[in-house]
Length: 494
Ligand SMILES: Cc1ncc(COP(=O)(O)O)c(C=O)c1O
Image 1 (cartoon, rainbow, N blue to C red):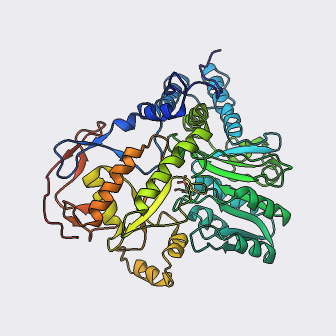
Image 2 (tube, helix red, strand yellow):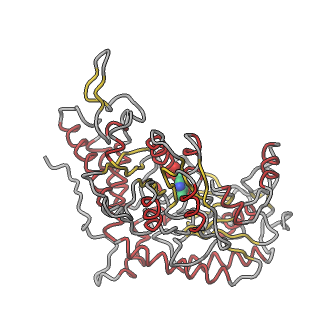
Image 3 (cartoon, helix red, strand yellow):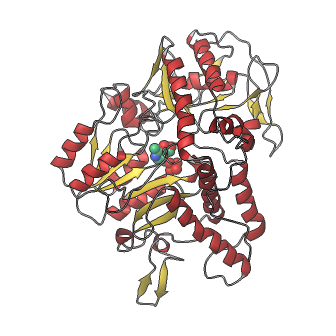
């Protein structure tokens, strides 16, 4: 039976040029992403402007190849997996079972001793790891720079200590080592790359330090997976990564599919995470034989098309080459940091070191609320950024040197969400180009000089919007936007 799918990482990327140079691949890679054609009206502009998407840190877009794989499954092979003895189910099961191999291959893990458990998002994967380690004595050592998803699940299940940061926003390795020495640490939970500053802690060095103390290491790979080559390293290597969590929606796959790489010896010993359909070998009214991993922890019908699409996105990335992707994004990041940091009254957070950071830049313009800056970038430049605290409140507080975060908390508890500390974040992806950075820098200069066009309502919510200017869908499903009114007002928020 030909199910028209394959696991081959070698399939050439359609965007590869004849001479195969990666510069050319990236020159044309936008053609692979239908979303790159998207345009929006901008204030004061006669024509719609092409979207500049700098929100890859939140979610990335699927390329054609991934959309096709998703669609092909829905159209031709849609069936539930395992235990179905008919052609559709057999093919769907085969495709689904291959996902584990593709992920394992992509992250350089050893399938003999490790498993890939599919979840819905990175948060789910991190929580599964916290659950798995809750059967072991000891505390979790995390860091101040984590996304809440690599802090709160551990906190829910036991004691957590946090390693601090250095003056430049990088991880304080001395503090981490000190806490490893002082506390009975069972798990070091650390990000592979920060979603605020892009900083990449040396995860293999941390693995070595953790293992020396008998602890395991969990890497939150949400921001790393699609932007930097990763390797779990051999199981007997002191630098081996024990747990690795990541999601497809940050790696050019659709929402709803993610995974946890984990040791079989742990995952096959603990009770199922969500007991139910698919997690057992046999059940009597009195006894249960649980399945081995990954089925043991994947209760209920999984997101089958999502998992297949996630595997396809990894094939897409591998066909380009993660080294090339890293080089490409590094060069755009360096360019962006150089240009933005040369602007007066613009403050970039974190170490800004291209060797130690992926393409994530969080910045503030002095004297302006981050929600206003992000709104102007959108409504006047069609530039998509994100603003706020990026679900990393302790890190933002440390970077902004907020000594009394409790005051902010009191303000929030009173329901006052305006003018919260935070930043504007531009996060890069595989199809971004230097010209787009030029556009961003021009817009940031214009905003810094208080020369924006619109009048913005800052008092409505944390999402700042212009008054009398809306973007909305003209017809369901078309995603075309229209300008209802064009505001050339003086700008009350300046
Ligand atoms: C570093 C990091 N970890 C975890 C998460 C949570 O990811 P998800 O939305 O897939 O649960 C994010 C999301 O932005 C992130 O950036």
